[in-house]
Image (cartoon, rainbow, N blue to C red):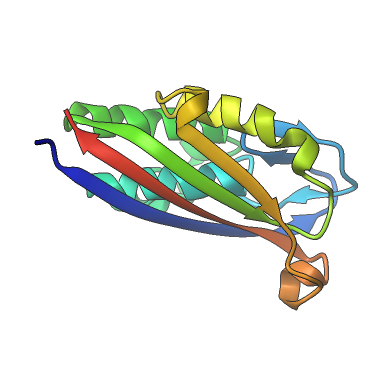
Length: 160
């Protein structure tokens, strides 16, 4: 019997003028993007953290330090792929991931399938092994006020 490992990831970023909004590797039409060192893709960051956690490899800031110029404006899908390769080098593969994006605006449901495809490919798992859901925060807190976006992710890895 193979061993299973679970990792949990979380990320949030505030909105900022002058940047594109990228979530799950998909550029989404919106009046603001997310502030961050890389492309600030909170969905991909949360999944990367979940995979790194399940693999016992720390977190995204440890593997890709935000003070390292190499990662400035990095494509987060590339970071996810690098983390997934590190997990694979330890004999671990992604069985399933579940990602929940919490945002008041923009409406994300039209982009969920494209996010699943891109995240599944970058995580070396495929579309059917990644779930993406979009929720609102019912007008509460920083998300409800339209100040930013938060994302939760869980990843199940299996030893090969």
